Figure (cartoon, rainbow, N blue to C red):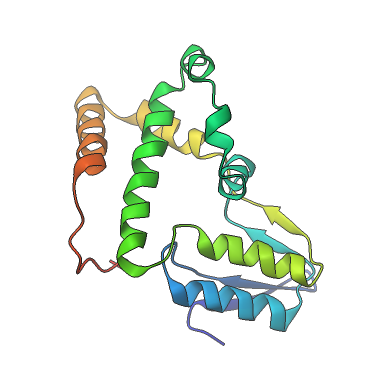
Length: 163
């Protein structure tokens, strides 16, 4: 068993938790091997349905209605998502893996052996909105400036994705 894998027993059921890194070739391989060798009843993936859909449908952004996003007062959330995705993508380029590939591998492995998958994360908008609301004005300024600067900053080639 891997150091990132823990097994728990709860109400007569065995639950295996597999810790992964979002930008790691080892995590992709470990997820596939674990699912295909253990044949679980279900695979729970730390992802919400919207993010799953955007990962599996690469053209979804073309259907995005910016006006609707702004009317729903989700402009900041869109900006935050874009900045975070850009940062993760650049980190992934340094190690040759796309962010979320381990989640796609889990979905693929589960589908291959006929096991259902369940998305078990809350929408990222909820997390970002809570972080925004709980911050002071100064905290919001720092958060916003950090997001903007990370959109334009280049990553050093020696960056370790496991920091």
